[in-house]
Image (cartoon, rainbow, N blue to C red; front, side):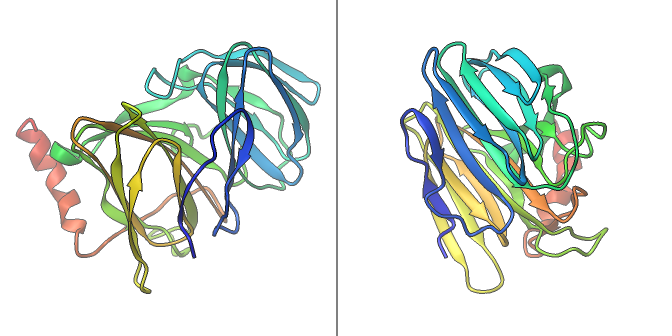
Length: 272
């Protein structure tokens, strides 16, 4: 079963070439100045995360004008628009715009809403050469008052030479509070765009793969441990999004590497 793919470039709405996940999906919308796209969410909830540019959204009877602003994913916190299940929507570009649209099944009755940069939580995970920076866009922990049925969404920035999602973790079964079942995808961008990183994905059932992370690639992980490293001289970005039976997050580290997480307080105390 393939777990890694390149998303086709060009204008318009692009879908994943294949998808091993049962709940999660994603589409990538790229519009030129004045371009429009009209669609329906059907039985799915969608979070439209503006990767770069600005657009006006008409969702049912609601209009959200000129949403966005950062030039690209490396240019600040995002604007996002939550599209509930069962609505028609139109997106009109106010300039060149690119929008990631992760989705998951939903039976939630909710109104559409905007998530502004001020509502996006940010911070640092890890220490030393596994330091990385995050944005929490739509999580139960950081935005408990924003309704969603399944989607959990954020962004991670991994500096030159650093590791991310380390120690590698998994979330394969519902066994709270120890672990929660969630499928996950990582949509990657790289700066400068000709750079690369490496993504390792493995599980206890014979999956052992190392993928080259490049601009516009995606990891699709219905199960298994996963981790990412940026090549020296390059920063990697990934939009991460999850879906499961609920939105409470709990992960299990690889038992062979979990000790690394226990070193974080000591390393930070040493100023690294």
